[in-house]
Amino acid sequence: MERVQLIIEAPTTQDQSAGFWGRVTYEDNLIVDHAENLKALQANMRQLLLDFHDLGEVEFELCYDLHSFFEHYEYLKISKIAAYAGMNPSLLRHYKAQTKFPSMEQVRRIETAVHQLASELQQVHLVAR
Image 1 (cartoon, rainbow, N blue to C red):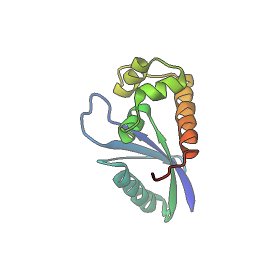
Image 2: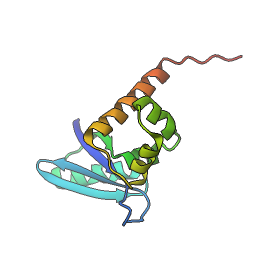
Image 3: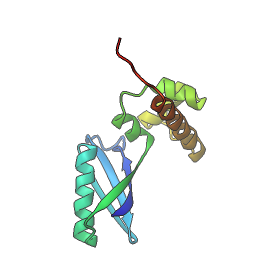
């Protein structure tokens, strides 16, 4: 099974269509598509990789821009992630709204904060009363 990086991006502010854009680079070919949700986008990309590269089985490594990350994981609190990252929550809201754009260093800080939060959640054990 081939592992391929799928970069998921939300539509730009000029493009008001709903859903997600995705792009894959495979054998120096850029493949781009759009779908209403992430599951449909992955199915479209699998079909395109099959059609153009005869790639039958593929596993995607999902990479998100910040806007699409917060759209897909809308239940996450931006203020909590900002606190973990040591950032101003309003700045993170600007990144989500695409009114400001983060540097690579800022993206790494946010990604580290998300991973830290996920790691803490993996340690949680729940019990019934």
